[in-house]
Image 1 (cartoon, rainbow, N blue to C red):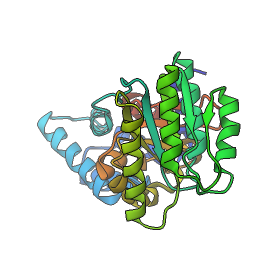
Image 2 (tube, rainbow, N blue to C red):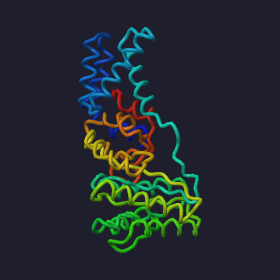
Image 3 (cartoon, rainbow, N blue to C red):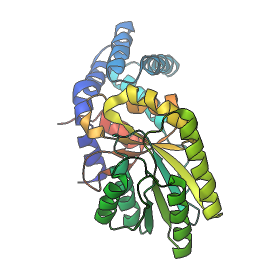
Image 4 (cartoon, one colour):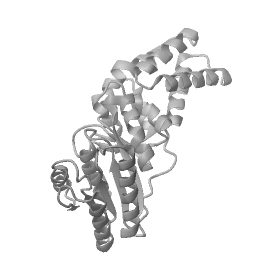
Length: 303
C-alpha cells in the first residue's frame, strides 16, 4: 500500500464522521451565513478547538470575498488551502550532527516506546545507522520493553539498570554513537515526573550531557501525542513543551480516532510542527508528516 493510500485509510474514521460532512456541506451548499455557521460547528465537533474553528471560518470568509468565489467547490478548495498553510512544516529536522540525537518525550501511554522503534525502523530503511538509549529508568520494565522493540527493529540499544540516572544512560549512548560513527541516537525519556520543575531539570540535564558527550551532536526533541485524546492531549502536553523546548510532534493512533481535527490545531496551540504521524500498529506505520497529503486524504472522496 502506498503512502497516500495508507494515510487515506488511517483517516477513514475522521473522514466518515466529520470531514466528509464538511466537504459535502461546503461543496454542495450555497456560500452564505448558514453554511459558515454549520462549518464552524462541524469543525468544533472534529476537535479542532473552538478558537481554531472560528479562525478557519473567518479566513475562509475573507478569501471568498477577496477572490470573489461563487461556488461551493471553490470555497472547499479555499478551505483546504487554508488548512494546508496552517499545518505546513516550514523547516526540516536538523539531523546534521554526528551523531544526530532525537529525544522522545511525552506522558506514559501515548505510544512513546513503539514510536521510538518505528522511528528507528524508518531511519534504518533510509540507510542510517541507529542506536537506541533507554532513558526511561523510572517506569518498571521500560528498558526491557524498549529492548524488545530494538530487537524487532534490528538496532542496538544502550541501557542501565532500573532507577539509574537517565542522563547517564543518554551520555553513554551518545558517546558510544560518536565512537562507532553511528548516524542517529534515539532516546527514550521518563513519561512522568512529579512536577514541572523536576521535568525541566531532568531534560535540561540531558541536553547538557548530549553536548558534553559529543560536541558535534545535533539534537531534536519530539513530543509524542495521542490523537485519540485530541484537545485533552494538547492541554496535557503544554508542561512538556514548556519544560523541554520541544522541536516537533509525533502524533500517534491517527487511525483510531474519529476526531482527527486536533491535528489541525497542534501547530497553533503548541507552536510546534507535526513531524510524524502514526497510522497503525505495524513497524512501517509511522510516516513523515506532509500537510498537503494529510488534507487531501482528510477530504478524500471515495467512489
